[in-house]
Length: 127
Image (spheres, rainbow, N blue to C red):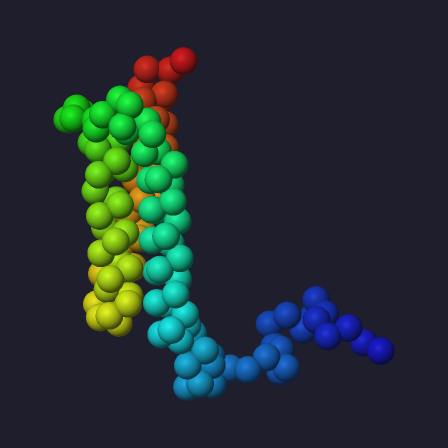
């Protein structure tokens, strides 16, 4: 029995369907119900993370510092939970799903922005 994928056959694989047939069957984008469910799950994760931070927010208060780190903390403490609730409402109503997807994508983007700021700070000032 010959292997299905051989090194001489990598560029011409007749077994795999063409891109056109995948696009015509709608296999590239997930069905709408899975997209809605993904938005709700990510928004629930954001709310769960906020609930885990809630005792510290109650004890120390909301960060009102307007530096880049303070703005990041302010968004994490106050803005992202509100956006998560809005994303759940939008997904439940099945309206403006692209906006709900942006709302649940902002917290990970905030984390990546923090890593980028830390890297730039280390590159400028060093350890």
